[in-house]
Length: 191
Image 1 (tube, rainbow, N blue to C red):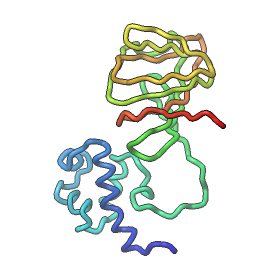
Image 2: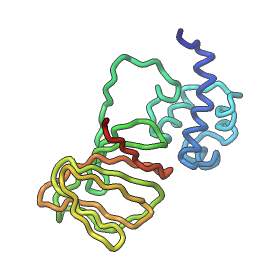
Image 3: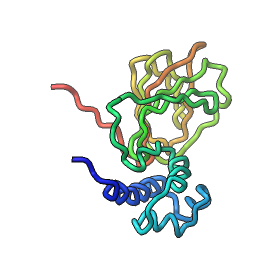
């Protein structure tokens, strides 16, 4: 049985609140990003205001989720994820998950060694895991440096200063999981 319009709209508020809190944003910060007032945002989250398209569009943009995810639109029957590569700091990043918060999956293509824009180590909240699909990756983690080959995996606390790039004169491709909440990957052996 499918939910009626009132039932669907009643779930939009809690969904908006979960998205905002997963990002760690305040109502005031979200208001500044969307152009909506903090009062309007609060009333939307608490179900005291019925959302309009004019309100949902900037919220979907800021939360980086499809509009249909905000309103829990019925599935179209097409299970494919429509990948939209993003170029950032010389990398090509392909998001493989659409849900905000929790563990996110990405395919990352690192440019050939020597073509990276910077080798600045970064440290940030979270936990990461990556698997090298092709090529070799250079991982600088704290004071240690590692070369990770195709078929190998790495798990790291991203609060440790780190840098990742191709170790070869060709691009390297990596499948990565990241969680800003600090969840660790749990792998279970078959059998």
